[in-house]
Image (cartoon, rainbow, N blue to C red; front, side, top):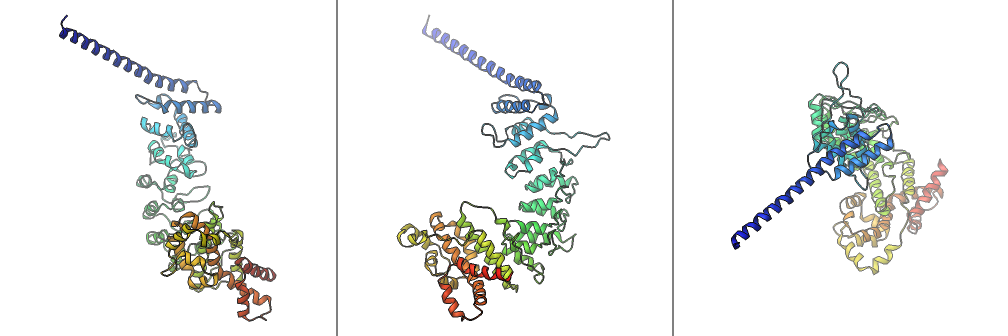
Length: 494
C-alpha cells in the first residue's frame, strides 16, 4: 500500500474515532439531561406534602439537582402545583444562609425557567388577594432583600396586590425596600398610595421613610401619598424620619415641598400616642440638622418639653465593639443638640440636665483609659498620625489631647467637635483613634459637667464659697466626680 493511501486510511480512522467520541459525549449528556427532568418529576411525585420532614427532604434534593442542572429547563407547572412552588420559593428564602446551598438558587432557577405566578380566581372571576407569598417572607427580614427583585419577576402581576394576614402587601414590600420600578408599575395600574398595613397602620410612605428610600418617597408624594397619615402609634411620616439615626434634612424638605400640594399643611407639631412630637424625637435621637429644619418649618419651641429618660438616646442603646468610638460620637452629638437648643432660646433646666447626665452614666461615658499617657510620649507612630489631623486651623488632634481639659474647653465649641467627629474622626487609623477617644470624650463633656456641678455645689455649700474657689476645687476633679456632685443635689431636690 502506498504511503498516501495509508495516510488517507489513518485519517479516515481518526475521523471515525472522533465521531464515535462525539456521539458518546452527546449520548451521555442526553441521558444526563433526561435524568435531571426524570429525577425532578420523580421526587415531586413521591413526596407526601402533608409531612414536614418529607417536604424538607424534597427541598434539599431539589436544591442539589438544580445546583448541577444542565440542558433544557423544565416547565414547572408540569411538575409542581402552584402551592408547592410557593412553598419551595418560601423555603428558599428562609434558607438564605444555608451553608451548603443558599443564595436563593431555587428562586433564580424559577426565574430562568420563565415561570410566572398566576392568581387564583374567585367565583365572580376576581383574583384572590389574601395570600402569603415568598415576597412577604423576604420583606420581613432586611438581610433577605436581595431576593426581592427576582421574586417580583415571578410574582409579576402588578394589578394584583397580594396581602398577608397582617395586611402587609407586595406593594408595601416594594416601597419598604426601595424597588422604584416595581412601585411605579403598581401605581400606574391604580394602586392606592395610602393603603395601610392592618396590623401596624403603616402606610407605604412610613415604610419607605423608615428605610430612607428617597426615590420611592418622591414617587409616593407625587402620587398623592398623605404626609400627615398616622399609623397605629399615631406616628406621622415626620415622626418616622426623626426616629432614624440619619441626620439628613432632605427627607423633611421633601415632605413639605412635595406633600403640601394636596394635604396642607404638614403637621409639624403632631403628637404620637405618647405625646411626643417630631421635634422631641429629633432631640432625643441627637439629630441637630433635623432639629434646625423642623424649627425653620414652623415647629413650636415655646411649648417644647425636653425628652424624658425613657426615650432619650434610645436609638443608640445597642452595644458596639468599638465602645469608645461610639460613646465619643454620642457625647459630641448630645452636646451639639444642647448648643442648638440654647441658641434657639430654650433654657435647659436641672431635670433636663439630669436626663443627659444619667444617659452619660448609663452609657459608661465617664470611664477613663490610661493608654494615652504612654502613647503621647513613647509611640512615634501615634504622634505622627495624630499630628496629621487638624481640629482647627492651629491645633492638631495631638495638640488637643495634650491640653488640660480646662484649656481645651476654651479652645473649641461643641460645633467644632461635632464637625470633626462627623467629617474626619473615623478616617484616623484605628489604634491611635481609640487611644484618644476617652480623653477626647472627657474634654467634650467637661464644660457641660462643670456647669451643672457648679450650680449644684454652690447650692450644697449654701452659696458660702466664692465661685473662684469652686473653680479651683473643680480643676482637680474628673467629669465623673463633677456629675456625682450634681446628681447628689438633684436627688435631694427630687
